[in-house]
Length: 113
Image (tube, rainbow, N blue to C red; front, side):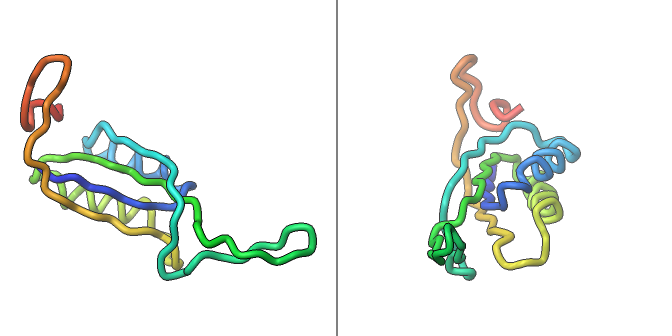
């Protein structure tokens, strides 16, 4: 199993969610995070003064998939969140050793369904 952690623009959350549902990947966790990458933040004008916003708001989306679904899920996330501009985000993939469904005690891929 694979854990996919995607950091995307806030306005792309619904697009990513729908793209994953279209390929049959259900269940995700998301939270709003703040950070910066290559764009190194941004500047803003407030009441005539310019100030730096060093941490840009983003959405972190976490999905756990079967190994066979991972590439398709990655492609769906990239397609749904791509704008071609700096700040589109990043995707991290890591190995998941086990999953346990608390309610039933199911383990492994059976706990994902």
